[in-house]
Image (cartoon, rainbow, N blue to C red; front, side):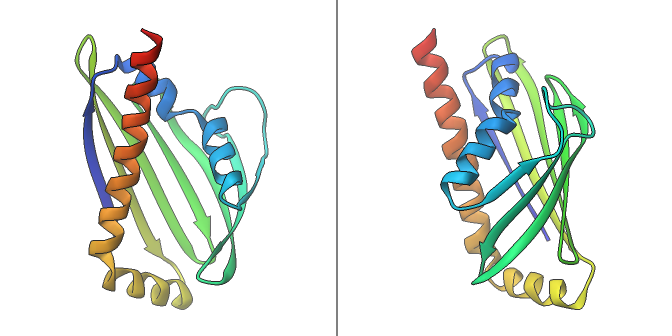
Length: 154
């Protein structure tokens, strides 16, 4: 099952990429929402950086291992996450439309590798419209935050 969205923002590509690849910021946000995250390496994010994440979903504790598999600043990165028989590939791509305008395309591809994961994915497919709206709203909210922060600093 795939989710994708695209947003254009009034921010230079270098700044937009720095914000979209702020993995420490994502970690702090997830911690505020009750997740437990352990980064298995240190320093700036690079290919091979990985995290172990524990969170609750549908009343059950889930474990996720995420690894940064591609990282080409300031244009694109890919994170592959595995959990309980499911693989989630998250891809973020940035394109400079002009010196001060950037298009951000974000996509997630969920694939089941076990019967339990297939059942979870099937139930998610039933609510795909609602989940797609939520996904697009979260990405839009994040891009608006990036734009607002950039305007305050310029």
